[in-house]
Amino acid sequence: MLLTKILFIVLIIVCIFFRILYLGNFALVLLVIMITVPIIMFVTTYIAKRMIKVEFAVKDKVVAKDQSFPVQLVVTNNSIFPIGKAEAHIEYYNVFNNQITSFELYLPVQARNSQRVTFRISSKFCGIIKITNARLILFDPLRIFKFKTGRNISTEVAVLPSARDIDGTVSYTDRINEESDHFSEYRPGDDPSEVFDLREYIPGDKLNRIHWKLSSKKDEFIVKEYSLPIDVPCVVFLDLKCYEDNDYTLPVFDTLVETFMSVSQFLIENERVHKIVYYNAKYREFTEKQVDSPEVLGEIMKELIFSINDNLYCEAPDSYFSENRLNALSSFTFISSAADEKVLEYIEDEVDSDLKNSIIVVKDADEAVKVQSGYSEMSLIPVAIGRISASIKDLEI
Image 1: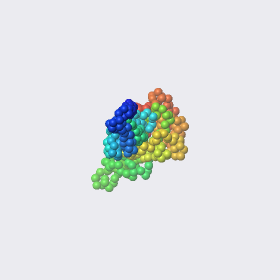
Image 2: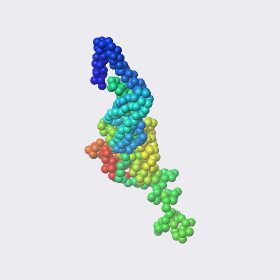
Image 3: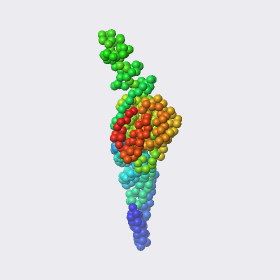
Image 4: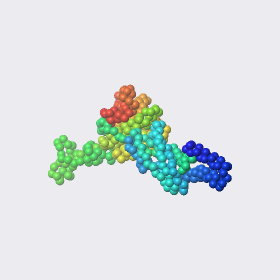
């Protein structure tokens, strides 16, 4: 481009000398043309720049981790002047780290038309992917001038975590929600408010469970099996606070959220309705949600990811515990990336729960060894980055 400018300057100087040496109309016309062409290029390209709109079009605002998804850069030229060459500088990054990936897109922009360029990106970590058009450079047809427009046009895509298989045991206790209407579809229980099944009498069955009216019709004893309530006071607490800001922040966050999702999914698969607690930075408060199906969990994960802002601000769990008493729970599971002794001692001493678990996400196996359990009423489980299934094998919840 610099070479083109130098060439035009040289040509204009030559035309000036040509005009001085030759007084004919041809020399004058040539000089006028050589001076006018750059002016026309500048004016038409500048007008086009003022009338160009740049935006992103994303079909899916929510995608799965490691899934490639399409993004369209849409450049709309409302002027009558076409742009032969435009150069877009695209940047994208996960808001939880500062590693920016960038590339260039080249496209023509027709007059009174929209030009769409599709590119695909993916992320191996969950979070918010921010896609930005740092600038769109417009060139005039002769490549003499360039103008920048469409700066800092951006869009965001939420990358959801993937649940991992974990190994554990779901225990059934006497602590149930007596007003619940959630009952197991596969296991009988002792709740007389709901009949699970009817079967033939087996010696040893309680007489008060005999269905006398049906038994008289069948000429044999028919026994009622009561239902098993699955809505128990079970809480999973996710501490989203990032205790370190370094290259491990994003992998730790990814493992933290996937661990939470895996535990919640494990409970759903075992028909355990439960409550989850996490800090919603969008509303600046802790959020409590009841999870009773995979669909509800999916919606909660979307809300959780979209609630996190760029500065990763999150209240420490102490503030929640100071305002909320956790009493009469069947199980309590705390998930964090820091083995804070103050928090763990509070869970050990103050949380009234039959079963207590603290799952701590650590950088590697060496750091996992340092996480020692000195608690008599709480199980402490270290989880190395990316090794959820291998780390959680004997969870009792």
